[in-house]
Length: 151
Image (cartoon, rainbow, N blue to C red; front, side):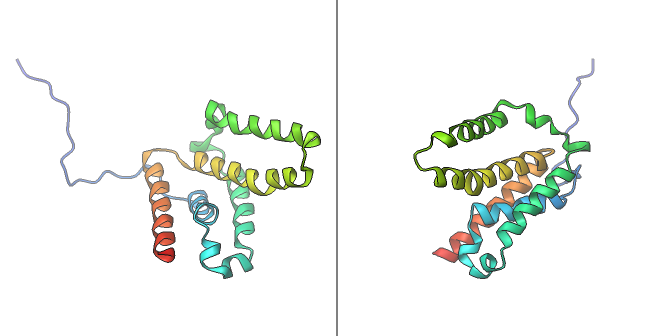
């Protein structure tokens, strides 16, 4: 009787990526560096050129154009993705009752909306494990650049 064994890929043979990094992934990584790792604080010329605002608009446009094919919006049905939008709805409903109306609106538009945009960009850009590894590598590069510049 023959034993059945699973076919094992030899070590050293790299498997081919299904997808290559595209515009959405590059813009998401750049926006991640701006919003999380604050590259505009390290190099003030980035802030003076309004690169963060440009990247925010570019990420929104790239995200809107790439929601088809392998990036169909099935991630919108996730409970984890719905919770921040429920928080946004509570914030908007609470605006008239806010004790500090100006700051509440500013918080929603300038702090919370970019976080939602980054979350949507990361969620839409990950198509498989290789994309998740690529985004994680971009995050680590941002952390390395920030820590090397500040210490």
